[in-house]
Length: 357
Ligand code: PMP
Image (cartoon, rainbow, N blue to C red; front, side, top):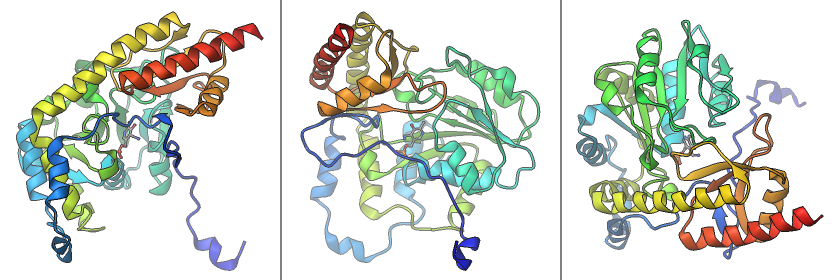
């Protein structure tokens, strides 16, 4: 190791799902939305003049925070906007957890960025095992701690928790901030948002990447008490005050204002999910009940890794995690009806080939 390398932070980074360059593939590996964003987003892009980019973007994200506040029925001061919910979550870990003298707790099977941020910000953490059914068990969260992070619905399992139990969890931890990551909540989970009035240590995090079909724009946000959000804003302004560019801010506002398009888009995915679940059960897959835009499934006879590789050879990308407890599962994003039909055609062939061996 060179002399200077001794001072360098050594990290094991998060590995996102593949973004293959080929055009003719079916991409069901990163929980993106298969439909376009709201038509008003296209209009924003068409009406934009490059000259507007001479100026710095509006730093308080006034309009976007206002639109979100109106949509959710909260005050703009209760909304924090970041560059994707990854940015919001990273900033939250940095703000709420980095001085904690007790470990932060989250499930052992959950979004795999949480432990990476703990590593980055030198936060002590404990991964609380989920049950064999993947259900989150609250017993493991008893006793004082430095913070709690729960994805609800959870990823990659798809399982949702009821908000009354989560409410009791927050109530029993006044000593720390509890983050509920609601990246997938629009597809069927119950939001903890009503609880932010009751608990000033509860942060609810959302994203435009899934239900709003804007993964490429990188918009995420958090809602909580004014006090909680104030700390987050101070951290952001100590780091980079111009996080979100001018075009993205406008795209975000356009998306939030088209409520009808949003609701229709979500309903369409939920409908596709309904028939896909039935079809997969018939094919010999089992999976926890999903409240998201993906299904986390294993096959009764054929190993997940084999199915993953064979689908990939046919240009169909799903997500496979070679990790303890979940290495026989595939996470399959809900695409269009047509994409899902193609997936099932390919699965029919792969599964019957495997049985005939
Ligand atoms: N939370 C969870 C549970 C996720 O699955 C994802 C998507 N990878 C994110 C947060 C981050 O999403 P984004 O940064 O695109 O908002």
